[in-house]
Amino acid sequence: MQRVVKRYCKALFELALEQDQLETVENDLLRILEIIGQNEDFTAFLASPIVRESQKTQLLTDVFKNQVSPLTNQFLMLLSQKKRSSLLPLIVQHFRAMLLAWRDIVEVELTSVADLNDEQLKRIQIHLQEVTGKSVILKKSYDPALIGGFIVKMGDTVIDNSIRNQLNKLHEHLTAQ
Image (cartoon, rainbow, N blue to C red; front, side, top):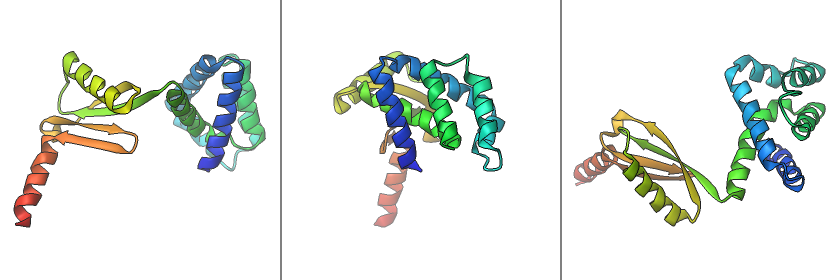
C-alpha cells in the first residue's frame, strides 16, 4: 500500500511542480486534511469497502469541488475512479513530507518538561540546522515525566537528552555491577 501512496503522491507532486501549482496544491491538501481530521465519519466513509465508489466520488465532489483548485479536484476524482479514495489521508501526509524534503526542510519534534524560552529554542534550532544542513521546523510538546532536559525526534533519529534518560542509564550502570 505504501508504494501505491508514493506513486500517486509523486505523480501529483510532479504535475503540480510542472504547472507551478505546488503551493496551491499544498494549501488544498492541508484544507482536505483539516476537513478529514474534523470528521472521523468522513475517513471511515472513504475507507469503507461497503460504500460504492460512486458515493465516495459524489461526497468528494460535494465537499471539495468549490474549495480546491481544478488540479486537486481532478486528482480527487482520479483517486475515486481508481478506487483509491481511502488512501487520501496518507497521500496528503506523504505529499507534505515530499514538499518539505524538496524545500530542504526537516520537521523536528521537540519534547521538553516545560516551555523552553525563545533563546533556548533558537539555539536548539540552529544546532539542528548545522547538523542536518537543512532548515528546521520545531514542533513542541511537553512531557512532565522527563523531569528535565528534552528529547528530539527527527525522522528515525532520537536524541534523548532528558534527565529521566540519564537517571535510567545511571540505574542500569549501577545495577550491572
